[in-house]
Length: 310
Ligand code: NAD
Image (cartoon, rainbow, N blue to C red; front, side):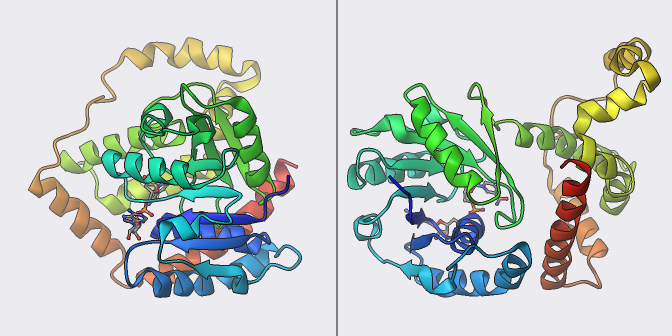
């Protein structure tokens, strides 16, 4: 059966990103969020991002008019063929919202959670009806422009539902990555957490400012990572023999005390350094302007990426 109506539960940063992506790809969207201002914020967010979706190419018949906002969760789920959950990252809240959704939607409807860190087995634990269609589908901000989505099933998730979700995300020009085993942070956030952790140490130890750390990624590894990821980058660092030479040369360095492994304590002093640092970096650019730059850049860099990884 074909999927036409998508219900988005929780419409903050991520929910609104999903709504934009679903609408631009021709789906009908029903949004639910208990916040009284949510509808207005959602409409503004979709409007703001729409020119970028036009640049990316709208699906036939795609229109903002296919957005419908509902104040009641059960009603919002009435016509759902697919559900994307994006409520705040609190385990109890998510478990209860997902078990409500499970109660209200038809048996075969996928319930996908955007959670960054909660395991799917935990999320489906309270579902009394059909936990086998509950999974994690973890996107990246801004959801309307970044193609990666990590799909993770829990103990009770059945594979055919993962396949079903995969085809929905692929229909929106996304790159679903099926994660074999559930782990905290899935894959990409675990990697980002390592960088984030080491960055905090470097700031905490007074070695570099937030701006210098950003520069060290933007003008260096970040450029290569965008094309090659960490493994192919290292493979090429090994010269003609690639990875095997690289490991001979730098393998022993893995034992050096480069990394600190544990996150530094987020003291008031460290928080202050990080906040004033990023404020200084953005002293002459408003958040709105940064968003415009980021979105335009993401469109252009993906066009370049397609050229080199056809
Ligand atoms: P957010 O705080 O911006 O939005 C959460 C929204 O949920 C709010 O609009 C709030 O009113 C609403 N809400 C609260 N209780 C609700 C309920 N009972 N039912 C429906 N809606 C409810 O949060 P966010 O950053 O959009 O994160 C949402 C989820 O997406 C989290 O699980 C987070 O881990 C995940 N995520 C976030 C990012 C990111 O970069 N922010 C990236 C990937 C995944």
